[in-house]
Structures are given as C-alpha cells and as structure tokens.
Image (cartoon, rainbow, N blue to C red):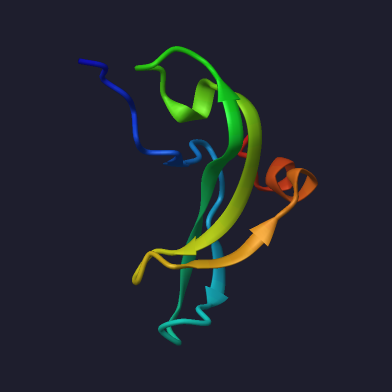
Length: 83
C-alpha cells in the first residue's frame, strides 16, 4: 500500500491578511494567502506539498466561505510576507 499526501493546498505561514470584499459570499473580511501546487511535482510521497519542487500558485482566499477570490503574483506574495 502506498500512502500519499493528497492535499496540494496549504495556508502560507507568516503572511499578512488582506481586507477585501469576497466575490462569492459578498462579505468584507480578511483574506488569507493559500498556496497551491500545480502540475508535476518532485518530492517524497509523505512530504508536505509546500516543500515539494514544482509549479506553485498563490491565491487570496476568503476566511468566511473559504473560496478563492484572487490569484496573486510572487512579487505580491513577497510584499505580504511578515519580516
């Protein structure tokens, strides 16, 4: 039997939250940064998705309905990181 980490999404640590109006639920709330591993990835079977080598995309996600609201670039991600 092979065990795998089927979750390719993770909440990015040490990032600021952004207050936006959600396109899905209409609430104005803090959105957190969600990382997503897309395409082929290299890593061990039980390794977390955030540490695997591959294509990563980052999104602002509503904290109320947990729906993706906006894709952000790596420059925007670096701006949101807490130093």
